[in-house]
Length: 133
Image (cartoon, rainbow, N blue to C red; front, side, top):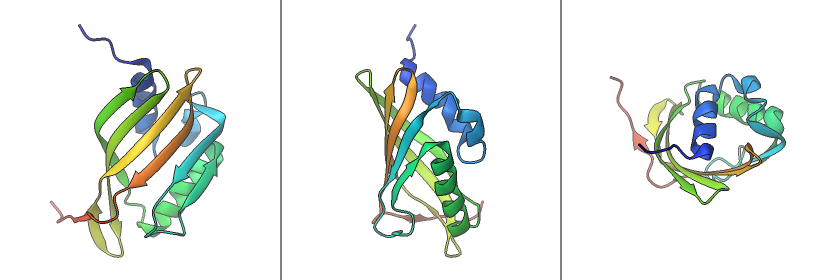
């Protein structure tokens, strides 16, 4: 029997709350949580977002750009020691009228059983157009 790493368990509790129920993430994210977003093709989103309110602001901006179609699924999750978790994520959204999927790496830093920082780094050269099912 394999025991799930506690930091992965923490992220599994957070994942269903993104992007629409971040208020419920209060105990999971540290008060001074920082979300770092890197994407040179979307400079209007790049930057650091502080706390749950900052993360909500990020997803509100993303929602405006994507007609509120953003969803994400985790493809692979790797704990790195007792502090970091690296997630291969696959965001899906409609952007400029086209349904797309993209790969992203999200690095989460966990301290004291709370998420204190995350770096969201989407691939920018391998966006995959999607066709409606």
